[in-house]
Amino acid sequence: MYVEAGYVKRDIPELILRHNLYGLDIDRRSTQIAHITLWMKALEKSPRILRRGERLVFHVFEIPDCDLSLSEEAIDFFVKDDEEKLQIKLQQQFFFENGKQFGSLLTSSHYNYKKWLDRFQTEKGKEHDLYESSLLLELEAKLIPTIQAAFLLSQKNIISWSPIHLIITNIIRF
Image (tube, rainbow, N blue to C red; front, side):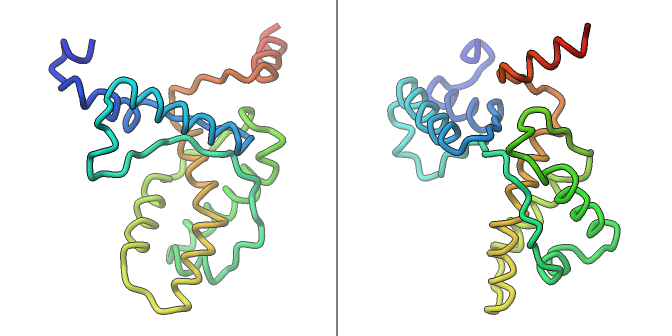
């Protein structure tokens, strides 16, 4: 199918992994197994994928429990706008406070998560003093995982294979 569409055969596994596959799970081990499985499948289809200079990106994340100890200083460093600060606090407190317990039942508001992720990558690429570097480390540990999960949850095409999710969905329909 992809070859017929004009893609180079050796690039197809990387393109699929980079642009088509996304996943969330409440169990960190499951995400690690997914990474290994995706690597093995990619290597099966394109053995030279490891020789390329670029790092292969997987969009498989653990659904985090929110860490409410994120400091005001870190939030202030990350966003300057009061409305965005409120959005981040709401997202942290209400959507992911019990992320591990609710898993695929979580919903997410439609904030501009992509902009936040891009902003973080931009800040991470800049030179910072020791204090700002510590704020970036705090953001990376306590905020970015929830933003990544929220971004995936806000996408339109999500398929859940969770048995409990399917049971609850069927109960609600009846």
